[in-house]
Image 1 (cartoon, helix red, strand yellow):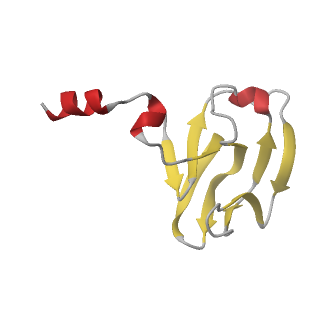
Image 2 (image 1 turned 45 degrees about the horizontal axis):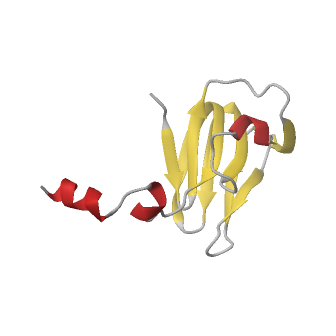
Length: 121
């Protein structure tokens, strides 16, 4: 079962897959790395700890276009994801896929008014 964390418009999923040939976008052994800027406010999602941030679109083929942010490898025992408008998240050592969340309307996922009348019964 996947382990998920959410912080604003960012969704983080722990994965077991190695990062094979992904290229490093940022590293931090002390300090922090910015993994995404918030879409609405421009505030940063910043990760603190010993981490590497990777980006490889081939590793995210099943994620809808434009929502893939990258992968994060946490090398320290934990890392802290911080954002000015959200509570911090502590991630244990491991590899994570980071994507944007977006608000979907029912019609965008194929649901129609017929589906809603069935759900209400």
